[in-house]
Length: 135
Image 1 (tube, rainbow, N blue to C red):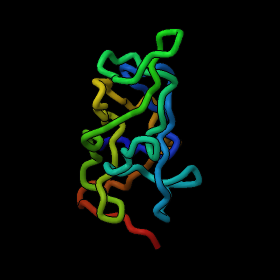
Image 2 (image 1 turned 135 degrees about the vertical axis):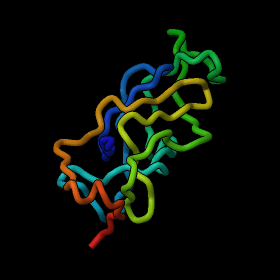
Image 3 (image 1 turned 45 degrees about the vertical axis):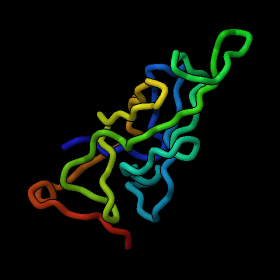
Image 4 (image 1 turned 180 degrees about the vertical axis):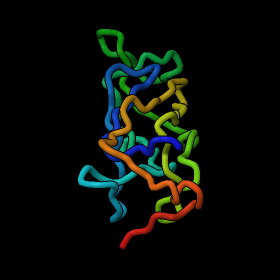
């Protein structure tokens, strides 16, 4: 079973400079004190994925600043690539740590750190897929 990703996960981009932090919209369900778990839909630019410090992608149409760097304005045509098998959160699939997100400017966003502290799943949950729900 893969590692779910949570609010505060650290992100990198193959065309970006620096790191960004994933922002997960609160759904009333948390994995602990640190925040909500990310779903495949948590890929909205400037809402869930903040800009990186700058962008080095040749396909980025924005003009360069005097130092030759272009501003990062992430754009995504699709959702996160990988999900945690057999578990959903309020009917939505969870993002798995190995997931990537392809930027329209040819960068690949990867999860450097899932934001998880401790994760434990009972064996009986692994045998029978379940849907997590808020209470």
